[in-house]
Length: 101
Image (tube, rainbow, N blue to C red):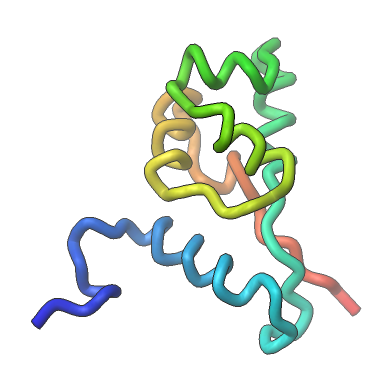
């Protein structure tokens, strides 16, 4: 019997992002505030690109683009597409925000 987490179709990034999404609205994780895609926007600026360029050049939908602006969950597949396009690592796309209080 195969469980959700043992499924081969999920990458480590998928599982991490699902975990962060599930717990993003709770205070069970002390100091956890969510994820931000600010590093992606910095990466875009460094490459002279606009957010809308991702639709054409990377194949990301407008809906996914809106999720970046709202710091909502996006799939690991989307993160992978961005990493392959920019030749970078997931940490160059998003970061986990922790309240230091």
